[in-house]
Structure formats: structure tokens, C-alpha cells
Image (cartoon, rainbow, N blue to C red; front, side):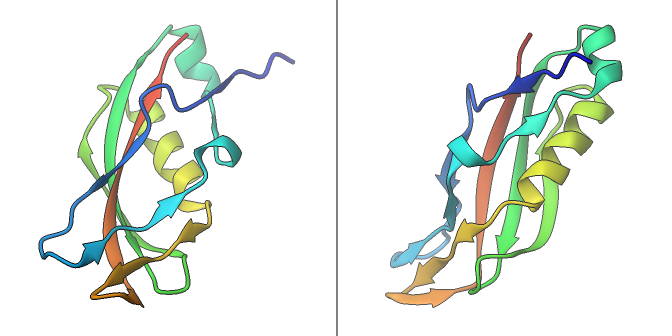
Length: 110
């Protein structure tokens, strides 16, 4: 069985803060990876998916949405599933831990 894991080639957490004094949640990209979907490997699919995650004050994913597709549903679904299972360091608002939105770009490359 050939397992392909892709690291965060272009993964980045970008601030989606609407207000000054807000810091978005972050996670450890080294310990949070998605497994390349088998069908996508066979079809040599590649691309970057941009996602937004609502992170609770406890660091769990409350909601997620795809901002820009990679162009392949399997890659988009795998990225959402993998990142949703990650533990985040909560964001802050005015210095206090709070529920915040954060953006993550995940690049799939062979």
C-alpha cells in the first residue's frame, strides 16, 4: 500500500480579523496533515484549496467552509476533513481568548 502524504506546501494561516485587536486561531501544520485521496493520486489531481474555519475558544473547529476550490472535490473534502480534526490554539479578541475565524490554504502537489 502506497501512502502519499502532502505537507503544507502553501499552507498558511491568514488573518481574517475584521477588527483591530483580533488575532486568528493557529495550528501546528507539521502535526496536521491530510492523506492524498487515492482517486486523486490515480488521476494526478493537484491544486490549492482555500478554507475558513470557525474555531471555538477551546480550540475546536465549530464550522468550516471552502473559500476557493482546488478544482477537485476529493482534494477539497480531504483537506476540510483533515484540518477539521486538528487542534487549534484559539484566537483572541481584545486580548481575551475568543471564538474566531481563521483561513487556511492547503496545497496538494505530486
